[in-house]
Length: 119
Length: 111
Picture 1 (cartoon, rainbow over the protein chains, first blue to last red):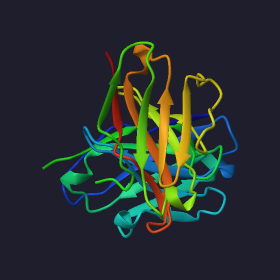
Picture 2: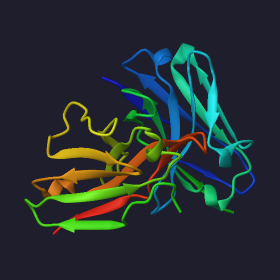
Picture 3: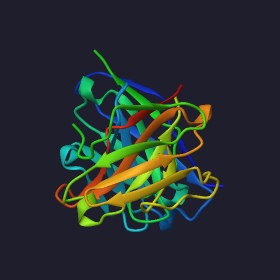
């Protein structure tokens, strides 16, 4: 079965960076893009961007351009998301999701990674 | 504020039918981009509920259905059950922003 397993919770200081991993299994990793969606406490879902594992091509939401890096390691079927220059507004649960079943259809999700930004 | 607008909350009694609206614009739903719906139970990751406007993934009961009209979409839930109490999000593509957008979410309460 398709599984996306994310790395554990992180606590960071303002100005720092955080890198979250998403280990995929149960399907051909190269064939489906991985996207990142975040959810601030008590708030809704916010799309951040996505990466196509086969080529490494990325797309970003405008507000994250310049601060978000997405990479992948196909040898270990893992995608990564790094956000730099963190502020308290970046405190959120970060999810990875597989784009499957159609364009922009997120059919499988990771369990989420809580990133807390606090001085 | 979200690009796609949803009511913050809806409610219904067990067995009833409820609908959740998702209002967009000419750069997303009105441009014929597909709408998808997700269900998020408390403390869990979102789950795909409806894709491409009105299709259900395997395992999703046929009590859930989706529809579109103009710049809006709707999710309908019939035969409401206690286990349906969750947050629901619509999603589409926006050509002005060049990426995916979500609605603000709707909390469904089963009375």
